[in-house]
Length: 137
Image (cartoon, rainbow, N blue to C red; front, side, top):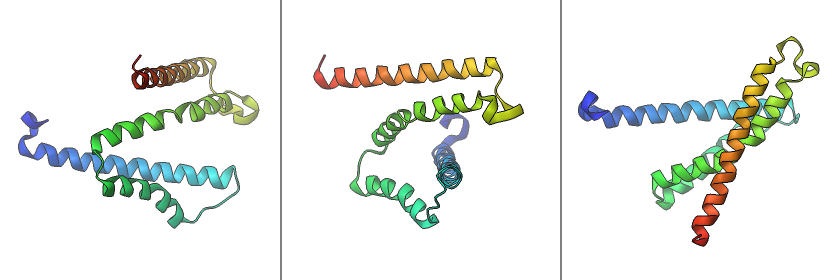
């Protein structure tokens, strides 16, 4: 980006990263709120939700960990949660009794199932690769 934007590239990248983080945090918080209220019939106060989502980041920053390495590790950890959301999502949206007229078409269900399978396979590969790296194999 620097050849295109010059010295402002780092500022633009930083602001974009901040905006992206704020956007995903707010969407994640709202989705969690809807799930807790709609499915579990439980409501957690806003300040507790904010505390739970912000404190881990503040701890990592205050301990002085390498931000890039921490970001990579956080994304690896998050990838393990994807199958637990994608598989039920595909199952629920393919059931006419649940979705009514908004049920997925067969091709959508097949493609989503393939994507879910790829994600599960990549997570298994990641786990195997990590254990091989740790054991020196």
